[in-house]
Image (cartoon, rainbow, N blue to C red):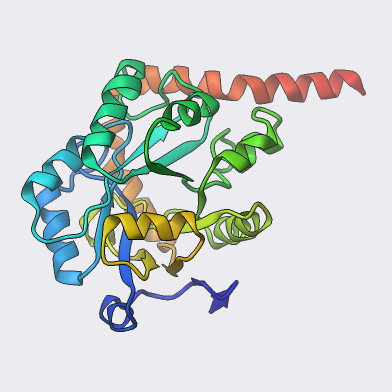
Length: 288
């Protein structure tokens, strides 16, 4: 099924995509450097077998990218990180070089992390976007329409008056197919990307090895630079399908042990994220 010509909700066929002159890449995947048990070398090996590129986007961490660069294996590697903002959104940052990613991480992310390494850091969305301005990188919002009952995802944060609408103009792209979200959320992301003139990306948000490659972003590119330029210029095609509910439950069960040791910092961060929405709700009620 085809939406907006370049968003395809079907299983990717990397060989066919390559034959058409496109490079497919899973732009949202986690490893054992954050809340996954997947080893970097296993992810690289499977990506090489599939013939796809890969962005390792661990939560507030870059160790997986550094190891992947060292291992190589001939896989096109897009240096990335998923930064969890203090006010809710998860921002996927893709850099043109690992050295820039390292510098950005050391100067801005590492010192802002909480005791819970996979939860929100102490920087809001606008602060993160301010600090990335000094680097050649692409900023895409992960699962932008968020999760039910959580102040997460830029669209939910804007609708809840926690973030101003100007944030849309500061992003380069939306993740329009996220393997971990429902079809309704992804379709809303497709429409929002079109409304705000944003580029389009897709990724599995995978934590288990077999999920890798279930959603890919495709570009007519031979290099990482060309691939990222295609995102910025809104010249990508996104192909993939969401995981069935049973597979989502399996992934959640596998991820849970990585989060349990940090229950208190996670709850503290969630409370801080929800406070603005709660205040706005109360003020609206009192104003009636």
